[in-house]
Image 1 (cartoon, rainbow, N blue to C red):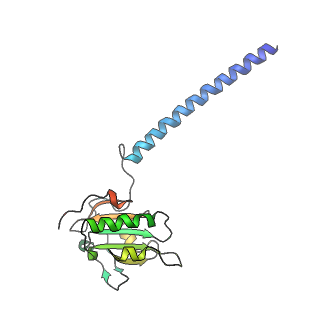
Image 2: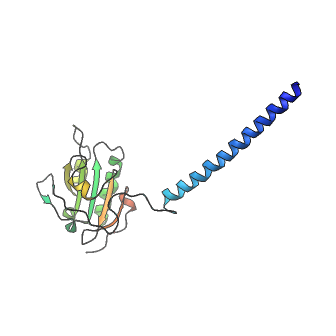
Image 3: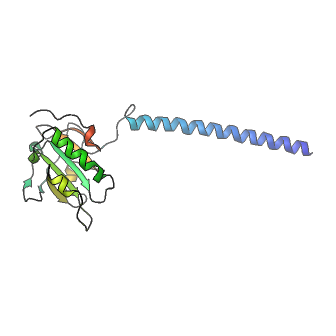
Length: 179
């Protein structure tokens, strides 16, 4: 009797181990699929905002210096930061480096800071040195025009104002075409 119970228990443990092994293989397969999607080797890359080749809708932005920006065709790059974004401060130096190293004129670069905080944005001075700066509320006019869905987000534009490329890291953007 005891021997029969032990055999049944060992058989049950064996079956449970096989079931666990099958589930583990299924999880590993799904993780590989997700990794391939995230790395861009399979499927579509995640949507980062306005798609390549599309121009933003109409918008109007007033910069910190009082200039009004309404034409994306005059811009070569648009950057979106948020005061509540934990990754934004670490992307400011690469953004400034990209603008400087590619000799983009300050008037052709717009940095939009989604400001929902009461305290000032600590990296505002760094951005103002290389770009026109616009402060707007969350889901503001410029963010809607560029269909922004995450921060920080950088758009490289062509001479017609259409998106050439976009991404969360300015260092990963291609070199802007000469105008």
